[in-house]
Length: 322
Image 1 (cartoon, rainbow, N blue to C red):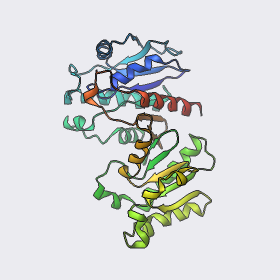
Image 2: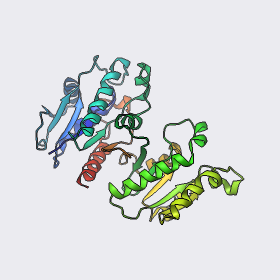
Image 3: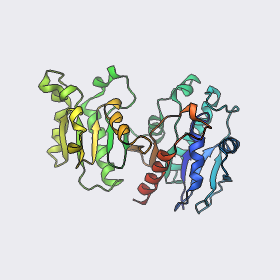
Image 4: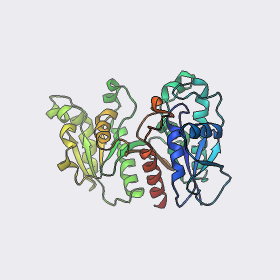
């Protein structure tokens, strides 16, 4: 049975801590953590966890309670908890490379990712925008869509990691068509929602208020949305974001499309931080992720919450069944 690979992420952060918590699980297929074996052993000792680390060699069954499959990826330099080291940037990227290669070559059902620190990878002289963009380039697809989800809300993004002043120029008919096509396709194919209902945020306050607060809704966004509505897709026209995210509006929605990162994600994370997950739509394999960062100050303290990683693993397994 094909495994699910889990990247342990930034070694100085809480990634190793939360990955160790996966030893508490027994699942229908193997979970394999990509990490330095000695690093995990040291972190387990620091956290006073009795975890048996087992080198993964193609085992076809899940590990037992208290056991964790690991594929060894060596760190370049000794890790100090809470202290970033650019010399270990290549270690982080090797995890991503292996996880993507295994997924693309059919050696796994996909990947769930622990957090990385973008700044330290760039400090090492390696241009890196994030997991989403890395997997997109590796897979060779023109567009992917970042979607975060809780048990009751899914929010997809038309743009991701852009400065706010660049967002308006990035909202083009071509981009919107690409994003919406992927969103509809994956809601149907991966989440088995036959007729998804999608609410769409406007870009400007009050969705432009008839052009008085911006013309993007009239000139760009709504014409694209009208084309989908004409095909029978259950999709709103652009709505003011400040009222779209009310319980009454959301109660029958399968997903919300936000125009930019900080328009949709603060609402979602306020509802379910620690229980939310990140899903990359549009890839030819499953990729889920935690909804939080590296939390350097919590590494090795025992205070890091692993719930988001477990939800990410649960969703990856659920999507694999589909």
